Image (spheres, helix red, strand yellow):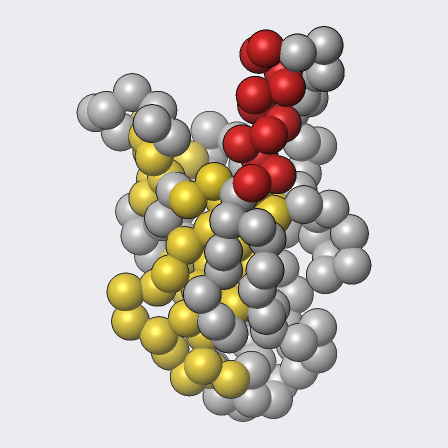
Amino acid sequence: MANATDYLEQAIYNHIFRDATFAKPATICVGLTLDTPTDDGSYTEVADANGYARYPNASGNAIWDVMGVEGSGANTSDLTFTTATGDWGTVSGVIITDASTHSGGNVLLHGTLTAPRNVQNGDTFRFSAGSIDVSIQ
């Protein structure tokens, strides 16, 4: 997954080489997209309806672990979204954000699912433990 957005790349650059400071986000959430998210932050997130909401509070040692390569890791537990109360559409991308809602915050990382999934009424979308790989290199 580990595609950093332009926002995150610039924030890290400014933090290291300029006078700006990049503070650790207070919250990390995982969202689902209906297309392939891009570095410039363009994406179409699943509509904030039919039971969809970003997966909240997705940070900390209980959720992410370090893998054998420096700067990389994966989710250590299942990330299960709420059950769809209507059709969400075909989910093909994932975003990691610093906000729990569509209208706020920044996308930090993004990726494409290896197998898009059509989420319909009554379905539950889940990322199994180890299925979101993050590598910052």
